Length: 274
Ligand code: 6GU
Image (cartoon, rainbow, N blue to C red):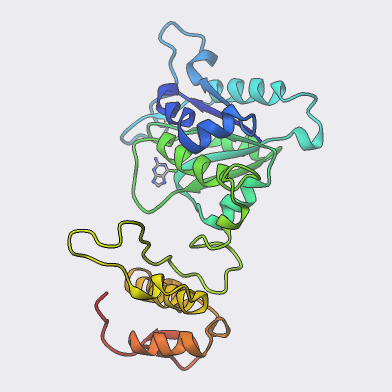
């Protein structure tokens, strides 16, 4: 997969040299190119922003440098044939929420171009212009406001890169990811433990030492229900109740959850402490 990032802070993307993404690059599984937007300015001060039409606070990123940058990068991707078209990812707090499902979709693309902006964002005409010719995805990483899209790019690239074949080492490892699409239910993963068996007087749950794989799997699922009901009740509420077996329903009942009028599960008793 090829990844291009256009930014006025190339050094902000240094973490792409580290850890999982850095190793994928070193192995040739990822071709990452970080570009300085100011290379496509022509004035003495390398201006990338200007005041907003209509007034108001802050500055808006000018369309011309983005247009020249994107044209040059797209042109560098060979002939302009159908499959040489990148997907353009525009990080913005006004975008569609970035989810595991979108990470899976993006991981199937051969080429992503990220356009992290500073200030109040990029002149709308840039998104419209490239949206007419390319797949443009405006994505937000959550309900809070950051000073720029660079940190969101790091987030999205890591979420996508770990899904690429051969990057994580163990293909099985994705299957149980919380939020894995098509999972039986969207459950958060429960607690994990390793050696030593006792630390500061704290042991580990006996079942994990039992060697009984069936009981261990059941315990893990029960713990997943504990965590999910406590931290993300919305994930249980939106799950098709057909995904819950008899043992799931028993656990949910212990946690104070049961089916409502429509069969979907909701809290029917006061919250149970973790
Ligand atoms: Cl993608 N950008 C900025 N600036 N803030 C955000 C965001 C993106 N997602 C959540 N907050």
